[in-house]
Length: 214
Length: 247
Image (cartoon, each protein chain N blue to C red):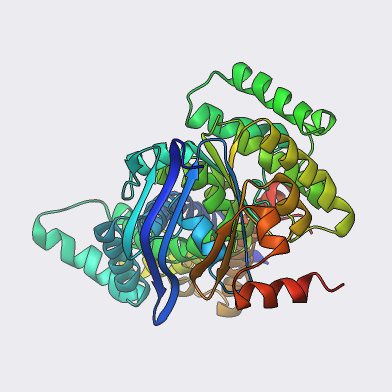
């Protein structure tokens, strides 16, 4: 127990670091994922190709490798930013590929007739997508998007290896101070649990409010 | 009957891969005419109906609406589709919108009407199809027949030049078919130009100006309903009628 009470400020800083990474990377992932999903169902071929390439590259790269590429690669091209920003970029772009695919599977659950009816009334592609298809797709993508964001919260631990302050990284400081490693990790795990359960709670509310009625 | 053609199909061909679903189709529908398309399953009648507003593309031939050739994808096609209403077998009401919103949406988005103006028009049309009291319900809360009548109101709200019906009663319980057919009969009497793909022979007899009989992707007969039902010329049509009129 005294692992936590003695080092509450170290834990708190790490916890806040993880929350920060999760929130910013989630926002980036949702925005990019939305844009890429629209691209992937667009009637214009070059947009579809761009969306497909984005998903293929990012979904198939190991996240650690992506961190290396962003944190060590981008500075070589003259782009020097704080490591936290780089970590948000890597996490956000990586997760956006999964969000994109979740959204696209949601779009596919909307019956074809909905789009046909909208088009037969003279609505354009973008009107059909934004007023008819996406609002209905949204209901069925709440659970998979929630899971993806929970995965993002846990993936943020990789940033600790690149000297970004976050929850998992606190174990190094504490084990150097000679604290029991098992209890150190128990408290870290509980910290992650608080974050992931909070995300679950938010998505449960969203689902109650907007989810598909059965 | 060839007064003022509104819908003209010339040498229309369509393939699904190897399958030749529409073969050299020629069809003219005049203003105010009601043309009923009948035929066995897989004869291409639904496909024919859907090519008229380009929900299905064709490989060759021309389709003209009010003298204008059907545009390719894009804004011009969207504008043209607004002129041709369509009623589907599975209703396709927007599931996340109320009945009133269903009827008003495209008036606002496509016809650029003010919202209250659109809602006023929607309520008139809902009243006309006998559903004024259901304006605030969601589609899932209504019966099939009611949903289909809303779909007709939604199509009428665009003030279309013609209406296409793709088997409008095929997904309905028998007792709900009549309420939809009555609305369609009324539209026919009011002089709406209609192309109706259906299995309702009673409707074809009473409301149609012409009956088009299709089989295997071809138009086999195109005649006045009384003629067609009493003296079908082709073997294919006689066979079809003998099967469906037996019971």
